Image 1 (cartoon, rainbow, N blue to C red):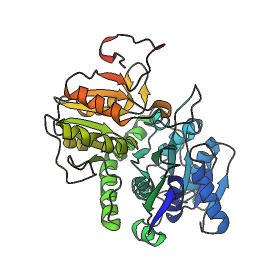
Image 2: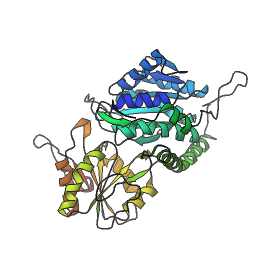
Image 3: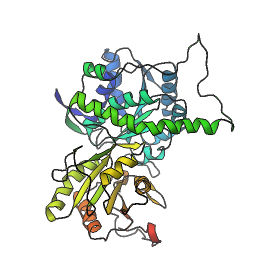
Image 4: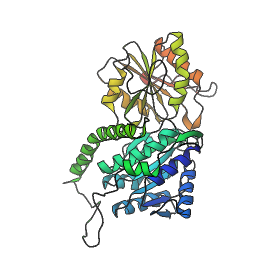
Length: 409
């Protein structure tokens, strides 16, 4: 049944229907509505068989999640921005211990200066913490990705972040169709932990590792991540078959004529300009690019749903050897360029593609259709610089000139 719902409410209802055994909550904008909704469901009994734990900090939220998962419960929490950084030590521990915790990250900028609006700098700061990172393009996908995340995390023994753009998605109202509890029960296997703390059979999880074994433990984590892309793709395909709609996947192609998501869309051609992006900006690009195609600009769109693992093979296939690749980046490596661009560039090393980084929407600045259209036109004309900041304000901002990472308006 289709409903009009706020994105946070849709995520909360979907998480509840995944039947977590423990939900840990500490409020921080813009994820607060998610844990508030889960709290209400726990109080009324709609969230059955779950212990809802209020904690005093984000570090405690992840610590309790680790304890719950290690004790054999399906565990869930949510956070954003400085809250994610505050729990960083425990985030790494959860991955190192192989605990399949699922966490919503309502993406928000990192201070200082203080900023509560959306970009991807929080999750990107922990991109190599050993968690799966799945990015939602819209609120329908934000809800659906949680079902896929629980399934993939538990099969792999890797925790998973579901990243949704703060305020842009969390506080937006859409017409959505949520999976019912019965449908999720049929789709998501019952939680069967690979390792459990049991007082009758004592063991240690997350023990000390010295130089003689630390490299091997990291190598084993690496091997699990090599399997992750195939597992995510498989669960995304099962989700499409079970629910009749697309969610997740790795590199998502959009049909060149309609700009609708289309798994059967052909790869880009060599002469195309291909825009690569993650998150809600994909919706803006869907609105902006058709006008360019009517002008005769051969532009295509590829969205990434998975950032960790990074789908290098799927991305290369989707790009099809296109000459010009424009990456819309929502996070910045200071002194280098966009974070996503670095991964795209490594995936395309040795190809003829020219990768350009456009840093956009930092701290919640609006990403305008007209600005994106200008970027694509200049890329097609060969005028786009290796690194540009979208809509950088004139006046008072020096523009240095330092070669390949030159900053342009």
